[in-house]
Amino acid sequence: MLLLIAFLFPMIAGVVASVWPGLSGKTRKVLYAGIMLITDALGIAAMRIGTPGTLFAISEQVRAQFRLDDVGRFALAAVLILYTAVCFYAFSYMEKEERESSFFAFYFVSLGAMIAVCMSGNLMTLYFSFELATLSSVPLVLHEMTKDAVAAGMKYLFYSIAGALLGLLAVFFVYYYSAGSAEFVYGGFLDPAKTAGHESVLLVVLFLGIIGFGTKAGMYPMHGWLPTAHPIAPAPASALLSGIIAKAGVVAVIRLVYYCAGADFLRGTWVQTAWLCLAMLTVFMGSMMAFQEKIIKKRLAYSTISQISYIMVALACLSDDGLKGGLLQLMAHMAAKGTLFLSAGVFICALGFHEIHELKGIGKRLPVTMWCFMIAALSLVGIPPMGGFTSKWKIAAAALGNGMGILSVLPPIVLLISALLTAGYLFPVVIDAFFPGKGEAAGNASRKGIDPVYEGMSVIPENDDRSKPDLRMNAPMIALCAAALAVGVFGTQIVGRMTL
Picture: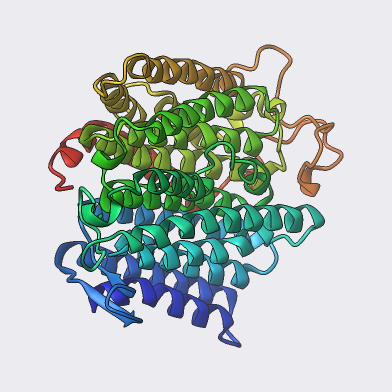
């Protein structure tokens, strides 16, 4: 029962608080904060004492069943950390946006859906939760309701539907060839008697399922929605999409490969080879595109394509170490990329800056924001002791031990090249922000999209507090930076104790 309450409560309470008539903006924020904190408490309680529960059952095999194992707990912790940070950040950011109540309504529905993804006890439940996470996050992309926002939202929806259909095909076949109740079991539950003679068909379907669920994670060739949707959405929504909602695809792939088919079924087959090659291609391609991009949020979106595919590289190793390395990267990327998108939101919300060249000298005006940006960049590149270093080290070690010849050596090389490219598109932003050079200053009036408050000024006054974020925006970024550091310091011990 506790597991069911944990994901149903934020959905119901969030919608009620958003649509209830006559409430002031301040009262709604207090309600939203209360709902978020109660959801956190329910999530923590579910991780500690939650017992399996069934919401409804169509047949013995097709049941909406929820339970938590260590993988689900780890993913749930990431969901709660980022959603909590974004909730308080959005209190300030969304004051300048229209339809604030609408944003928070879909925010809480997507939160409930993501919790359900983490708590799913079988593949059918995961699929329903996965689809709900998609449908509830589309309005977050559409929020501004401009022509570009609608186009981006529709592209996100169409890609997601196409990917989900491929995933559904895998669900059908897995259930057909399953033994028993089809509940998640590490090592898989396929019936050898049923699969005998049909291995080739099942391999094709599982590969399509990986591609389908990988669409949400931005894996090539189904990555096109991500650089379109992320820059259009409000910064809090971009942080959620990149930091955790895209990870719903990762969780689905983990469950399909490791807990339904079983890693042994795929190890050494053409599926493992093709999957690993696609993941490495996505890592390299995303980094190259990010390196060339000049718009802040679009650069971060391409970066997400690359960084999430680090997880796919780890999972394609089909080993315990690969799975644990992928989970570490999930948490480290959540914290770092959440911080970077929230930082970009400060640039946009406070000053109206959207492009990289506009950030020269901004470190003096927004020191907290740029320090958070720098710490997150260090983690994303993989500088010790940040979480990005720990996760990438574990992934490289898993690749070297996968026994695939040249494909054991290529992943670490690709990851190293990607890390250098990541440094190339993030570190110059930090350097220019703190050391712009003589004659360079933030606030040039020729910049497009500048906040109307400063229109006509040659230089924005440095002592003008209107250009500075408040504690509601700074505190979540600082907390996420702390989370990125914690993953680096404690992450290896945490995943080392996990029971898969």
